[in-house]
Length: 419
Image (tube, rainbow, N blue to C red; front, side, top):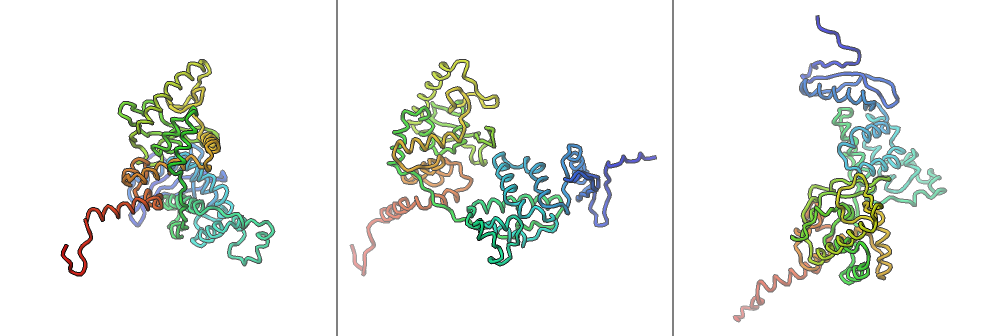
């Protein structure tokens, strides 16, 4: 006689349409239990889904259901799914956007009742900055009926177009997982058109300003860092994640393979932004000389610090740019340092990321090919490079036109003249 299954163990059956289904009792976000079904084309596929569902139940992770409030589904997705697919910084930003904007507006909607109209009205209200609408006031109501807008002047505070786009991306990603789990039949956020973003023109330092900044930073203990940022276009986190084993001073190269970010209150080392961000960058001779001098200075700091030289437990060995006691440098402190350097150099204030733009602009002005610049900066596509620095390329395009004149030689004779 076959052994009877234990209560809650789950069942697998074949449906009349040829697919398989499995069912088991799982926990809901409110603590109650409900029977949930999963489906697949083969028995093995359904068995794997059933095991995964039961593992989450044993770990106390609530299961998603189609009728659950969308706010509860977001909590489930951010806790159980997103951490395995997103980088820590991206996950942190998604959590913030969900808490501040999405849940107040759409959190009470049932997952399977969320419509394209709900998403479109939400994005429209969010784009217009109507915070009262995000708290549940009907965005379709006439403006005169939304008196709180006039009193609180909340509609005057508008998010950037890029933030609106990010919020839409969070909705798309979360709902796509619901489609994969067959909780809903379609991703309604995909149906709604992505808000357009007006790309802001980058404002890099010109060659004169860059020279003034480096001259002022000459006596700074992190002079080599500022020189690297302007000369190689490394991102802030990439330069702070460099170790001496990543640099070959004889060959004049460095390898970008990690970055450093502050996530909430913790400094976290991770992989670079994209696959193309893992790259080898050639170093100008002045960068090699500056790194030699920085290494000697760091050895002296280590000797002076003695027992006070205490690197963080989780930081890689041999970090290049540390504090005077050997700890990883907080990325935010670079912003403060650069602000002071700009003021001392008497140039306009720029962000650390603008030094990356400065590198690309200087390379373009020197006639360096856009493909080479893409590889140097670690852009995912050459389109990103061309779109970002299109305004800087005007002089390069003019020079290209003049070179074409030189290549074709003197003007062709006019009116049948024979030269």
